[in-house]
Amino acid sequence: MTLQIILPDCITEMDKTVLRLAEFLIDRFGNVIVRVERFDGWDGSNVRIVVRDIGLLEEIIKAIGEFEAKLGITGTIIPSVVSEDEAGCVC
Amino acid sequence: MKLAAFVKKANILLQEAIKDSSMGCHNKAVSTFWFSIEQLLRAITYFYKRVTYEKPGKLISMFSTLPCGKNKKIVTALNTLYNLRRLVDHTTGIIDYERFLRARQLARTIFEYLLPILEKIGTDTKDLKKTLNKLPY
Image (tube, each protein chain N blue to C red):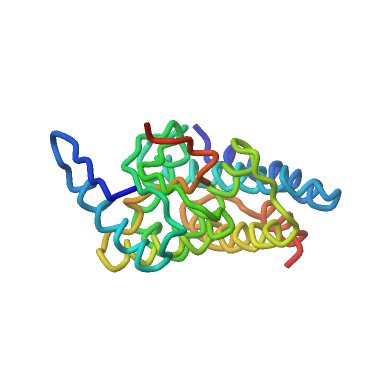
């Protein structure tokens, strides 16, 4: 599969943050990261990170905290880290 | 809405989480740690914003905008514990003992951070502190 970046009609600051976060997480965790999505979760989460190894949940959330601190946006990202099989596919 | 009611419920839930832990019900305990903390977050956000939120994500987000909530370590601990709770309650994932111990440690860190905030806003946390002392390190 090749990389596809599908942008919404109206790009928000949060969309840009998600793009940067994806790069940050890929640099840190490589192919453990399957997808990084802007998301409107039922529980108030706003970014979904689909991973190959859910065992790295804590490390990934810690990295998100570092990313937020670097950008001065602590608390902006409410992550939902899910495994590939729980997330379903993007068809 | 009385702040004491949130703290009272948080205390009851923490007692239940400790009982669950002692019986080896680690999945239930992780879930209940979160629900106990959620009550405290509601008390604090209600005090400062006069509103509460049902959605945990919104609650964490709102807490992190408060002067007392701008703490990277605590926001990360909240997000981690909440994701573990979601793993337990909404997926087929099962918490092993090692991860349960980590969740318990996160819960303690969060309680120890939130209790002084609650005291500062005039809430009695004596009973909750007593219960927290029973939570093993």
